[in-house]
Length: 254
Picture (cartoon, rainbow, N blue to C red):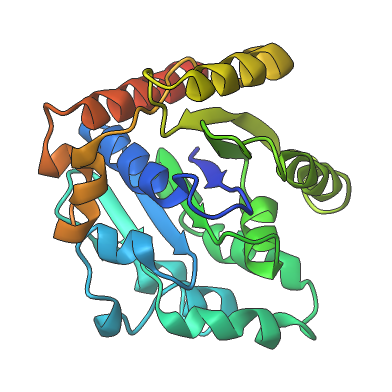
């Protein structure tokens, strides 16, 4: 039975897409069958894994519209054991188009039913908002992972996201768990980074992943080559961090 993990935070630039791509690739390298779903109209997870966004004919938009099945939307990637349902800029329109549909929050959940058991993990890269797209992802997911940047405004907006998760649990998806909070963009030389880590760990204890994603030049470069950090530089600090996170996720779900 596959586990669906949504990677969400309405704040932009916290490392959501970087985490979605590299966690998915790391799980694949560790011999888990993984599907990455790009649910962000910016389609960065699609281009970041090496797929030409303009060439996408069937993707998340068609999946949510139910005009194509999930199987028809799946594309193989260069990374072992990793498939993707890509996105295209047309995904921008989906929030407006779904507004007057019945059960609009359940479109993704229904679409993924047929393929959930084909994968060990399904990772959803959410848009940086708490709109209908993210709501669909949270309703379809078994758990949500929240990346938090080790910077001054790190905890700003976290309360709002946790309230959204609570209301999704109450109304749409009582099974939704919090997979964990993931600290990203950590720089050990900065006192502020260390303070944020201490504060998050103090407030959230066991909810915080032990793995911390450090700032790493290779990690920033990889998407411009259309590769995960595993393919781009497997010996880098970024690759080690994401492999460590993947192992933590696997152990947690064992």
